[in-house]
Length: 161
Image (cartoon, rainbow, N blue to C red; front, side, top):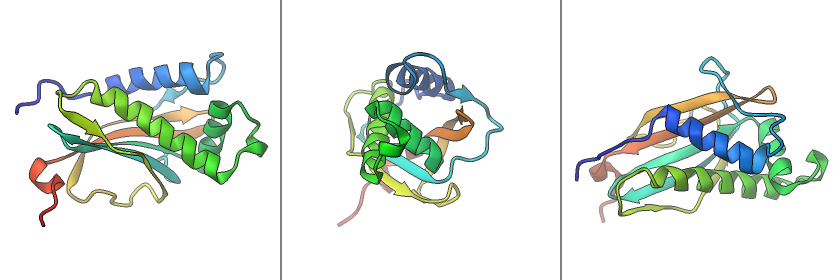
C-alpha cells in the first residue's frame, strides 16, 4: 500500500496546540513554544506504537520538571500533590492522545498500542530499526518538550517466530 500522506512537524504543532488548549493550558497563560534550538527533552519518554498499514511510533518526551507540571495541569492538582504514578498515567495519556491524532492522518487499518513510559536519555536508541521522520521541539514554562514520529519498515516491524 502506498502512503498518501505522512504527518509533518507542522501537523505535530497543530496537535500540540490542541493538547495544550484542552489539557495543559486551557487559560492560554503558558503555551508550548516551538523552538528548534531547544535543548533535547531527555528525562521521560512516553510512546505509543502504530501498527497495521503503517508501522511506527509517536513519542512525547520532556524533562522531569515538565512531566510533573503536565501531570499537575492535566489532573488539576498542585505540583506538590502529584505522585510518580500520576506522572506515568498522564504522560501515557498524552502519548495516547497525540498518537490517536497522528493515526487519524494515516491510512485506514492502523492501530495504536497502549502507551509505554520510560525514563531514558534522549540519545538512547529506543527503536534501532526505526527512523525519525519528524520532530516538534520546544519549551513549556522554560522546560524542554519534544514530540516525534518514527517510521519502521513493515518487514522490520514484524517479529518472526
